[in-house]
Image 1: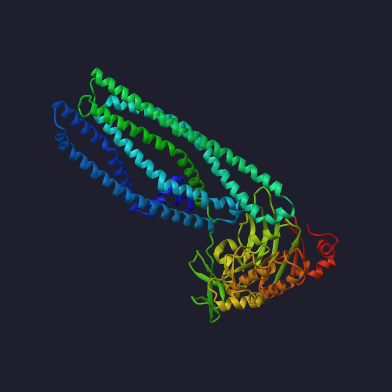
Image 2: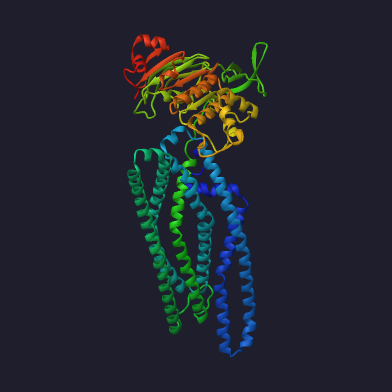
Length: 632
C-alpha cells in the first residue's frame, strides 16, 4: 500500500484523523463538552422569557415585589447553577484543547519529518529548503490556531445558533423567520467578503514560503553576495517577493477588516427590525404561530431581542473566522502535500548482513564479525544464498537523464574490481557526479544495468546498498553536536575508541586534540569554528568509521589549499587502502595513482586508461594534464 492510500484524500480529513488517532478518547469528550457549554449558553433566552412572563403576569394581578421575587428566585438559582456548570465545562475543554492542540501538532510535525526523511533526493533538488522549513513554522502555527481556536469556536457558535433557532421557532415562527431572513443576508455578504479575503490569504501563504526560501538561500550565499557586490540586486529580488507578499496580505486583511463592521452593523439593523415588528405585532394583536401556542407578549419580544443579538453576534463571529479558516486550510494543504509525497520507492530484497564463515560457507550471524555478506532470497525455489561483500561495481550501457527530455549519460559502461581506484575527470556538467548518484541509487536508471558484486542494484535494499558505500563530498556537512558525535554519525554503533582510531587513521586526531574540549568540543553552524580542511578531515573520519568496502570521493579536496590538501590526501589514501574507490577530481594531480582514469565529455566516456596510457595517447587527458586547455 503506498503512502497516498494510507491517508485521507483531503488535508482537513488528514488533520482530523491525526487528532483522533492521537487522542481517540479526549477528542470526542471535548466535542461533547463544547456542545454542552454552547447549549447552556443558549438557555438564558428561555429563562429570560419565563422571568418576564412572571413579572408581566404578576403586575397584571397586582402581586407584590416580594411575591414576584419568591417566584423568580428558583429560575435565577437554576440559571446561576447552569452558568457555574458551563464555567467548569469550559475550563475542562479549554485545558483539553491545549493538550490536544500541542500534542496533535507534535504528532503531525513528527509525521512530516518522518515523511520528509523518506523522500527521494529529487524532491530536495526541486524544492527550496526555506520553503520546506516554512511548513514546520508558519503552516504548522496556522494549524495550531485552527485546532485550538477556530474549530472549537465555530463548533460552539454553530451549536448556539442551532439551539437559539429552535427556541425561536418554539416561541414565534413569524419572528424567527424575520431573524433568519436577515441572517441569510448577513451570511451571503459575509461569504462574499470572506471568499475575496481567502483568495488573497492563500496567495499570501505561497509568497511567505517563497520569501523564507529566498532568505535562506541568500543567507547561505552571503559571502558570494558580498564578494560580487550583489547587495543591491539581492535586495531588489527580496523587495519583489516582499511587495507581492505585502499586496496579498493588505488586500486579504482589507476584505477581512471590512467584514466585521459590515456584518456587525447588519446585525444591529436586524435587531431594530425585530424590535419594531415585535412592537407592531403587540399593538395590532397579530396571531402568533408557534410550537408553544402562546400569544404574543412583551416577554416573548424581550426574549427575541436577546436571541436576535445572540444570533447576529454568533454569525459575525463565524464570519470573522473565515480568513483564519482559509489560511489554515492553505497551510494544511501545503503540509498535506508534503506528507502525501510519494516516498522513495524500494523494491529491493537483497540485504546486507553480518556473516561468519564455517566450513568454507558463509552464514548469517547477529554479532559483528567484520565480514559482510549479501543475503539473497530466491523467490523461485525459496532458498537463501550468501555472497561475500567485495565491492565489485559494473555499469552496462547505462543511459540516464534527470528529466526524460534531457539525457545526461549516454551508453556508460565501466567496471571497478574490488580494491581498484577509478577516477573520473572532465568538465563541469560532463556527468561525473551523476554516475556516483546512480551507484547510491539516489536516482534510478531507465535504461541499462548496474551490478554490485554481480547483483543488480535494483534488487538490493537501498538501506543495505548505502550502508556498503561511503561518501566524502566537496561540501562538508557537520551537524550540531560534539566532534565525537559527528564522527560517530558514520556508524552509530561505533565505540569511542573506534571513532578515535578512525580519526587517527585519516590524520584528524592531531588537530582534534588541540581543540578546547578535544573530542567533546561542541560544534555549531556546520563547524564554523573549524577550517575547511579540518571539516573535511572530520567528514573523512566519519566515512572511515563506517568502514565501507566502496568509497566515493566527490571533489573532496577541490575547496582547500595545496598544503592542507596534502594532509587531507594522506587521510584519504589511508581510507582508500584496500577498498574500491571512485574519485571525482578537477585537480589531476590527485588521480595519477588511479588504476583507471575515465575522461567524460557531454555524458560520454571518451577516454579510459592509466595515467601513463592516457598521456601516451596525447588526447583530451594529455591536453588537460599539460595545460593545453583547462577544465571548464
